[in-house]
Length: 365
Image (spheres, rainbow, N blue to C red):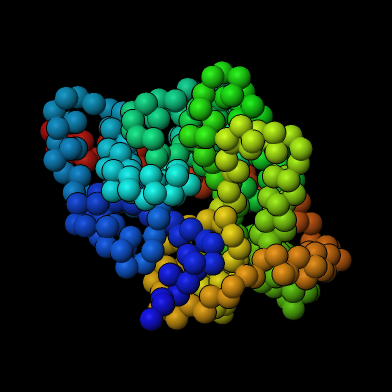
């Protein structure tokens, strides 16, 4: 009998797990999810690593070694996280090759404190790529204004990029333009552009959280839980439009790969909503959905997966966003707030990660 996760995969959506820890790697748990839950990639961020390091499972020996070498917390984080990512890349190597590079991907993020520093983001992206030293790694760069130039420059170096923290359609168009510019530069630089891949991580549930609070305050609670799906669906329409241009067709003819849209933040935050809402209502070909394990298990247990739930809902999505605007809620303002908050939250997680590693290093001495 076909499982919901297998059905989602058959309908064109790549399932990536939004979590990574050393215990998942060494226990075989990650391999099990590949076999039983159809996952074909992994994404990480500072919050995920902070949680993994706080639990400490499997990190004691490496922390002790780093402490003995007198390594500081920031450098220790670099060594610890790149090892996890490299090991996960090895686990996904077969999927990477069989999918011709589209899947089998493991993402690692530049330090969130660099989100508004173009040159420093470029430098660290190159450093992370060199350290992990695996073709199937993706370097995560936030879609801030300064991040856009970094995305182009890193792609131009032949490095695959996961663009994160995208909330608005306007910024998404800028992200695609940055990717296409990077591919053109990579070609000019002599790189094999068929080896370069990218995903654009469009955040979903956080949009409902922010917009719904504003709708309730404006006296329009009846419009709750509509904005995020509408925004995400129209993002897919942007994907279809921007990769159908003459400029892109020329690059595609030379071997360039589309930058796939990735639905992130797909765990439901409102307990009143179906726990698979941001998965089953976002089904389309060439899509990636990165899920926390709780959402993955809910999908596997009781998800009902349609053949498609994006391209047949564009007009409804436009109507929903028009209703939100008519209620006096600015989606542009909400998404800008979310971008700023997203960077700030990752910085908080990064600081927690540094603090926990400092504590572990001191205890190991």
